[in-house]
Length: 324
Ligand code: SF4
Image 1: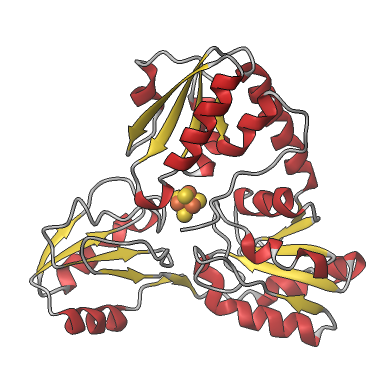
Image 2: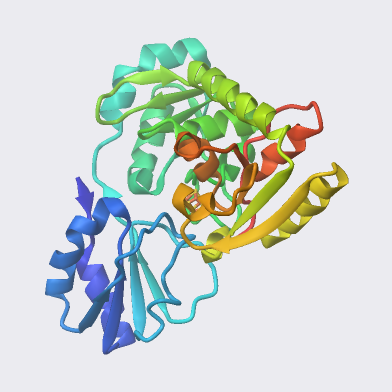
């Protein structure tokens, strides 16, 4: 179950002594907004827009508040207009039973395991590590770049906790749900990745999903080769703002005889882009948008790292945001 540490929240607010408090929730926590608002003895303003990650803090929109509480994500150390309190929301599910159930499988694959997860399982990762060590494995949990707060924590745009230890491990074990993060690990490291879902306790090898994803992405890249006009979409969300990459890509595409235009927007959606009538788009923002949402768009949408595959034959690189 997801846990919000209300005592910690009140303590942090007491330190700041604000009058007006902004609240921001990702989609999965919006149902908690009213409960939190009701318990606070301050004038509260709730941000109603979409929130995708710690890259996406509504400090500009709520700059009239004395502080902003951003729920559900670990801090990315960006510069904000007002003080921002990051209230991580942890899941208290014990990871050990799902490891216990799959021990035989892991033993067959090798003794050196790289362990990774998303922020909600971070407090449970130590127990998982101890259990695996006591079962005879060598366990490695990597440190990330400055974008990453916790050892072993992956973001959909940053897998540095894995790339930093890939030489030491036989394979990676990602504990969590969904394919995006473990796919990012396998495409960033070239290592085999196993996904263990702590709720169902099922284990899955990501190789099949990796092949499926690469097939889809190469088909999109192939289509983009015929495009004449490219829209380079730069996000105004602080932690996804990739203007440097957009300017570089613009030059590269011009060298290939293509036209390229830079668009800035906060919300990236098919509806926003349709009127511009480009032949293809490059998402200079969150890497997940092109990968997860391609089916919603009529035109090919590429990640930053896929652009070079229009003109070169080289290994596929998963798009990442290295810095903050
Ligand atoms: S850029 Fe995308 S993957 Fe990275 S933190 Fe933001 S929402 Fe998550």
